[in-house]
Length: 447
Image 1 (spheres, rainbow, N blue to C red):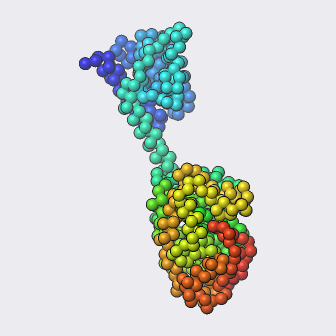
Image 2: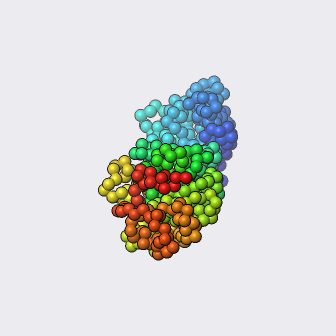
Image 3: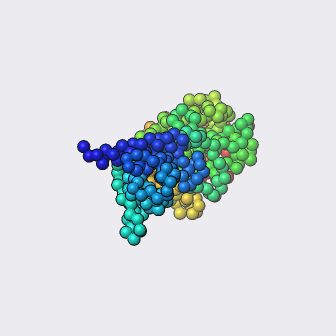
C-alpha cells in the first residue's frame, strides 16, 4: 500500500465533495482543502456568482480559512488539494502564502496555470518554490466538470423557445442580414409534428381574413428569398402571404444527414403548416420542385385551396438532362456555387450572398445532396384537381416552351385550356419571380 497516494486520494475526495456542493449552488464545481499535519484546516468551494466576488475561487476560500485557523497568512508546511488546476490568480496566492504543495485533479487546458497554459510554479527566481502534484483522481474530477456543463447546456436549451436539435445545424441570423429587397422577418415554427423539433422560418404577412392567401413554396436550391419581388405586390392587393423556408434551406434548421429528406416529409410539413395557420382561400405560388410538393399538399386538403400559379414547375418524373446534371453537381460538389447556378453572372454581390448563405458553412449541404433522390420521389401531378382549377380560371402555368410541352404530356386535357399558359424564357435554375409576374398573378386571380 502506498500511504502517500492513499492520502492524496483521501483529501482529494473531500475536495470533490465541496465541488459537488458548489455545483448544487449553480457554481462551477471546484472544491479545495488545505491540509497541515494530516488534518484539514481550510475548506473552500467556488462561489463567485453567489458572493459577487471574482476572487471567490475554491483555493482562495480555503486559503483564507486556513490562515484564520493558524493565525498567520503564511501557510508553510501546508498542502492544498483542489479538484481543478489552479488559475494564475490562485497560483499567485498559493506562492504568496508559501504553501509547500499543490495537488490537483483535472487539468484546465484553457486557463490552467500549473503547466497547461503556463506554469507560475516553474520559476526558480521566485523566493519560494511550491511543489505541484498533478492528476490525482483526475478522471473523477474531470467527470464532475463535464456533467456540470452538460447539464447547464441542457438547461440553456430548455429555456430557448426553439432549441437546436443534436442532429441539425443552424445558420446565424447575421448570415441573412441586410439582404437586398428582403426585409421580411420570419415567424419561427417548431411545433409541427413532422418537424420533430426543427426550427422552420415562415414569413407570414397580411391579414388573416384576407380574400386570398398566397402560399409561396420554393424548390431546391432556393429559399423564400426567391419571392422577394412578389411579396410587396401581393400585400399591396390586400392579400395574405405565407412563405416557408423548407427544412434544409434558407433560414430554417438543416438536418445533418441527407437521409432525413424525402418528398413525403416535405409534403407533410406543408400540410401541417397550412392546417396550423388555418389557411383558407389559398393560391399556390410555387417555383420548380416546390410546385410539386405544394400540389401534393393541396390534393390532401382541397377545400383550403383555390388554385395555383406555377413557375417553371416540371411535371414529369424524368428531369430534363440539363436540370438533372445541375442537381447532380450540387449533390456531389462541396464547393458548388449556388448563386452562379441560380442567377449566373447577373447576380449582384448581395444577391450572391443571399443565395449562398444557407450553404456557406461546411456540413450544411445535406439537402442539396439529397435532392436528386427527393426528385425521384415527387408525387404524381393531381390531374383532376388541375383540370378543375383550369376550368374555373384558377390555374396558370408559367415557363419556357419545353415546360409547356411537358405539361401537355403529363395532363393532355390541359390543351383545351389555352388561357392557362404564360410562356417565358428562363436561363437559370431558379426562374425570376419579378414584380411584373406578381402583378399579373394578382390580376389573374382577382375575385
